[in-house]
Amino acid sequence: NNQVNLRYLKMNMSSVTFMLISYLWIGVLGSKYSRDMNEPKPTDSKNTPEFRIAKINQVWEKALRDQMQLPPVKQSELHSDLKIQEKEELQWKKLKAEGLDKDGEKEAKLRRNFNIILATYGLDGKKDTRPIETNYLKDHESKDSGTFDDPRLEKLWNKAKTSGKFSEEELKNLQREFQHHQEKIQEYNIVMDAVSRTEEIHKNVISPVEADVKTHALHEKHADLKEKMRNLNQGFERLRKISHQGFNEDSEFKEPRVIELWDMAKRANFTEDELDTLKEELSHFQTKVEKHQHYQEQLELSHQKLKHVEALGDKEHIQRNKDKYDMLSEKTREIGYKMKKHLQDLTSKITRTGLRHNEL
Image 1 (cartoon, rainbow, N blue to C red):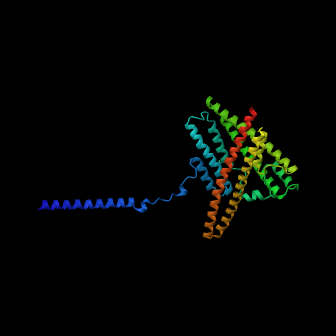
Image 2 (tube, rainbow, N blue to C red):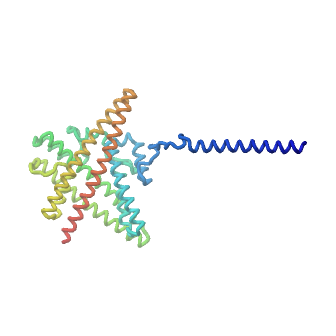
Image 3 (cartoon, one colour):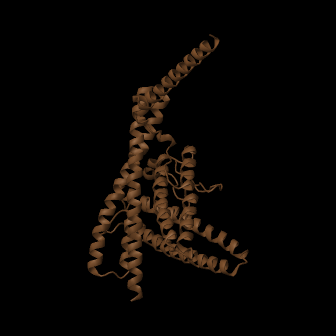
């Protein structure tokens, strides 16, 4: 009897164990194939990196953290520059994988461009002595305050605006040209600082192979500085001429960057047909620049309105204005990237073709 009872108990336990395992398995299958488990989970956009390259993404995240230092318009400019930098670095990685850029020339240029971006936006860890624009509209519309750091530029601007030779619209265009020239001065100072640092490193080089690479990089930077200084001198001379004589009625373009490209093209010995084609392309580019400026102004206005609404504390109005600000911010970045990429392509085209003609 005891043996029968023991056998019966074992059978019962086996049945209970089997039933428990079955229930557990059904539960797993149920959860695996349930709607909750199979509905696609929304991705958290906040955790998705803005850029694929880690160092570029770190710079962007630092800029977002330092919002008080970098205003919205400058932030969108930085985003466009970083996007171009990332695209070029990804292209370079493909070249390197194919065994190209053995001398490291392209890599050195990318590193230099990246350092220029950091310095331009005050993200290089140095105490930045350059003034950060806190209000885009003020910088582009105010004509009464001292706007320019360079004494020669400031003096020339004061003479121009009190000369009575310019209408309000012409003064606005002229101020944009002065602003563009100041940015070029700042860029020149950044490159000069980079050259000084490279020269210091060059003194401490021991390896002959490394010395050759450093010497080549140094020559490149000196050539870059020389070109920038020549452009600065030509740019200042043009501003001085306009300030004294007024705008030329027959001037083809009014945007500073387009005028600069057109002047470069005319000096580069293009054929008449090539110049006509380029003039048409520059006209399209000027439209892009104007569209970008319009969105920059709208972004700044939206930012000011958002700050005002946030101060009032109305949650519904805050969300509505934040949505509009986010949309404008995204659009400004997108247009800014396209505009800067087009500028880069045009500059490369004019420089490359100009060099080819000069060699012939």
